[in-house]
Length: 68
Image (cartoon, rainbow, N blue to C red; front, side):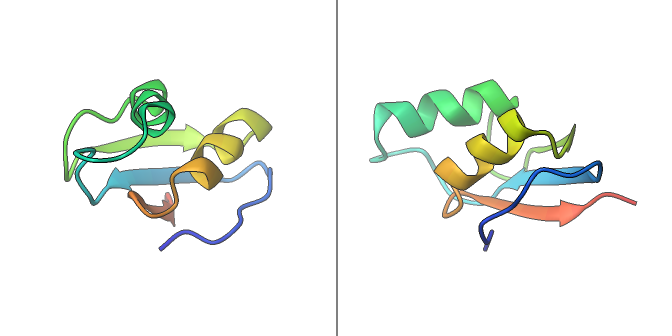
């Protein structure tokens, strides 16, 4: 599970691991803004301030790894 990430120049692989059923609307919107559409879907983003803020909003719904 994601910890409190801080902005850096790293590339992140963000994977949705839980369903959006029953979560707050702002958390659903955050996942869509990240580009995630379904469980198991992975997107690659740089760890800028905006992306890190979104990840810290939904840490219980995503798995974050440093992309190689």
